[in-house]
Length: 251
Image (tube, rainbow, N blue to C red):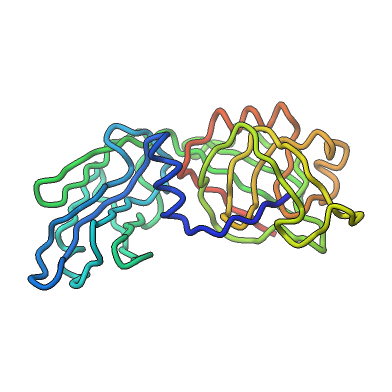
């Protein structure tokens, strides 16, 4: 199942992770002097535990005129000198994404002038959904710990191939086919409440419990784009993964 949500990662992440404690890094060059102050927030929040692919997100109070100066003011420290890259998602929001992953179970420090914070990473929980094998395999710190039967998107609604991160965790979520243009009156229509939902994309792809497709899991792809798991497996993954952990979808 899919639920379309038209929000960029950062806007939604700040809203969701402010409750769970999440991440941003920031510094701003404010007109006309191009001074680098006026930082509204740095995420992940101080002391928060996040996944190993979670970006640092910095939100400034005002639009930044001198982006290069703002980026220079952001100092990120890790135990293994992780490298990464900046990208701007709005005039006042910049994110720093690690090349590869943060070290598992480590501390990441973020400093913007006098404003500093730090967050922790959990174990490296990496999920791989194989469309052709009908499996969802989870490794922790490089060791495969569970390979689960799964059902991905049917040919008319394929699960998008790519590398993603867990954007949020929702104990229950209502999925309505009308949000992706399918009337409830259609044979393809649905409105259901899914449990143990881990969001993969803002367009509505989740890993979630799907008791209705258990007979197809491991054998056929019958969903509307989501990664269907049995209730037991979905609960286990939900309890294991952190927001910001990698989810890779392969052929």
